[in-house]
Structures are given as structure tokens and as C-alpha cells.
Length: 107
Image 1 (cartoon, rainbow, N blue to C red):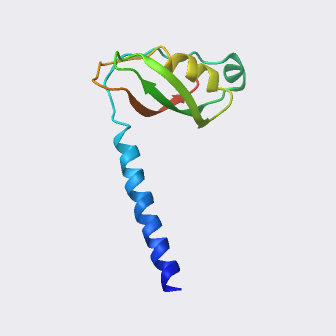
Image 2: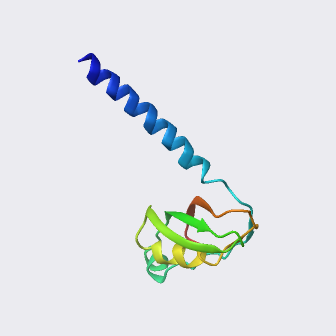
């Protein structure tokens, strides 16, 4: 029992340490140019609003290398991905990852 508890505590500490390292890889970079997403026609007709969460991989040049959907309203997913891929960030010495939340509300 004591060994099982010890292994569990060690596992939690390791998970915490790895989680902290991953969070450190997600440093925010200043957005230089941000394209607003288009509001889908279906969302307009149905008066919908929602959010989309994305993970962006930003190249050293500041361009978005890739965007991956993490969740959100399916009606807005493609519009959010298309817009985020056009964003430009400040340059950096290494590639970075960012989590962004794009909100859509009826105009």
C-alpha cells in the first residue's frame, strides 16, 4: 500500500513538472496583424454565437505554421482556422506554440 501511494505521488509530481515545461513552451508573442474571421452565413441566419479554441504553431518569422482545432462550436471552426492562419506575430529566435480563443458574436 505504501509503495502504491509513493508511486502515485511520484507520478503526480512528474506530471506537474512536465505540465509546467509544456506551459513554458506556449509563450505569448505579440500579434502584429490579425485577420478577423468571417461570420458564417448559417450563424447569421440562426443568430448564433460561440467560441473556438485553437493551438497555433508560430514560425520564427512570425507566420502561423499550423493551426489545430482544440474545441468549440462546429459552425465557426473553419472560419476560425482560416483567419488564424493569416495572422502575423513578432519575430522570435525559436518556434512557439500558443493557445488562442476566438469568440464569435452576432453583429
